[in-house]
Length: 182
Length: 131
Image (tube, rainbow over all chains, first blue to last red; front, side, top):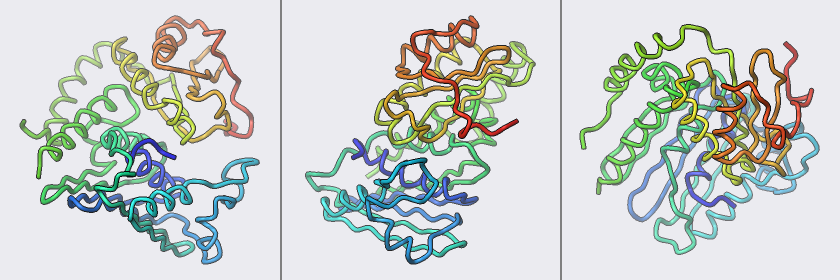
């Protein structure tokens, strides 16, 4: 179980990167009553049989982790969604890509705290590989969007201490501005 | 508060770039790789990552690549950090908290001394691509 929603979001979006996606979109929408997350990718996708087993904790993609027999990411996500009056839906086509959408009731007593979204996005952006990830965070009527390649270009790469520090400042400033919004 | 824009970032970067070029013109030949799987994050890898970035900035090191990787199968000793420095054996440190992360930068990368009691392993063959 993740301690914060930021960790849940980072974990589920990381699946897209690990599925070899070139383009990932991640949106986080807070409207006061619901927190909704949608992740789309053009990774390798799953056939119907695999999708049917994706929420089974005793199934994991063969070869993903040597000798590991469990795959807990999606099952724990489902458990959290169900526990917080939310929903979860997985749509995928093998060779085309995957869309994962989930939501929580924003006021549910069992909902974990949001956590540090700026840090979670920075971690996703810093993940190695040749992919773009477009992130949008919407809260009420305000929103901001930033893509990995755009930010990497602006700060001169996300693998140096300077680049990472600047990117973090930027993401924190966007989040701070959004948190002030109603 | 005025919103920080991408233009601001480019300007900030331009300012820093000059200082960076004066410090060091060589290429990035050192790598630190932080295990950021679910296990690593649960054990505090984000704090480790931040401490590494801060320590590298403080020392003014411009030749270090900071990367992350998923679970390396060493969940019992997370957070783990792999350090690649030319002329030194590549090692994986285990249980790297923020204080140890600072040591990794100051002792290993700057001082070229291994931190003996934190060495966990050498990278196993199956997770390292042959050069």
